[in-house]
Image 1: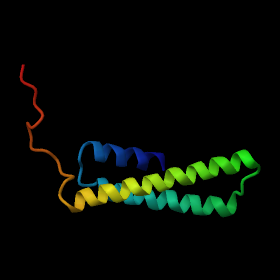
Image 2: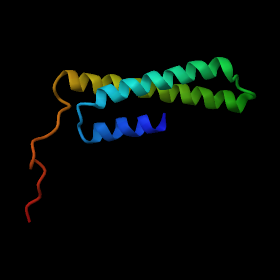
Image 3: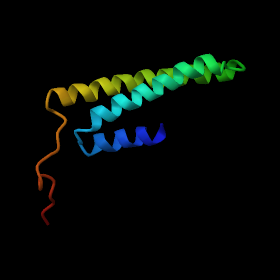
Image 4: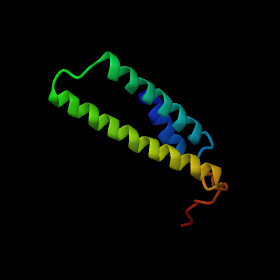
Length: 90
């Protein structure tokens, strides 16, 4: 799961066309894990329950970011820049 999160971030940072796919795949994996953990690993105490809520809130934020990345890609905004667009002349 961590590798997929890292890969989606790197894909976004490099404006890769794979970014939306990686974000969606990561959201599916994370959502599946959170759904499983909610049933299989009930919180043992109040602190753990608070941590679970924080994790779920972070997941919602990730879903919003995923939707934004997909929107950027669908509208042609998320695309690699032409070669040499960021060259530095000294």
